[in-house]
Length: 160
Ligand SMILES: [Zn+2]
Ligand SMILES: [Zn+2]
Ligand SMILES: [Zn+2]
Image (cartoon, rainbow, N blue to C red; front, side):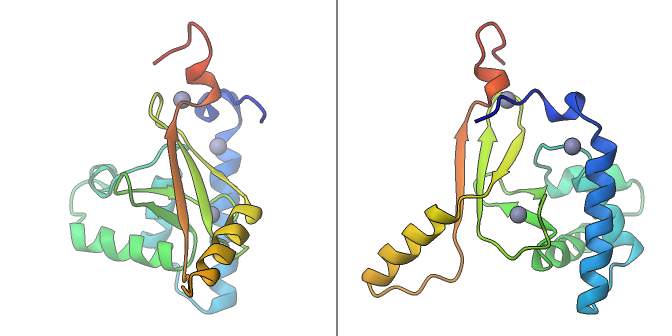
């Protein structure tokens, strides 16, 4: 695997945000789903970096007047559209870097810096599906959340 420096400083993150917002506009237009200014703003805030964010962080970032139910409804919409994923183990949210393709998700969650990397491992998904099928089980969705240290945080002298 390629070693990744902190994506918040090592690349032009503005492009990540632009790409995410463009893809969202595109996807919602095609589906006839309404990407309201608030939903778009929440998506932008989730994409503030590559770390997961909690609903109350978003509330704070949205500023005065933002109400929790509004945030949760916006997040529910973004999750339903596949633009944002919910990390069950953290009760937090992260933007999806490939929302155009319907997929099951695997996440590498760094406990040092908080960066979340979404990987694409279709062979894992297939394997689980096969095992489930063999057990007479019909999977609806599967999410794998792996906790550990990213390349940056596990490098010698670079610990958290
Ligand atoms: Zn980025
Ligand atoms: Zn995704
Ligand atoms: Zn890290």
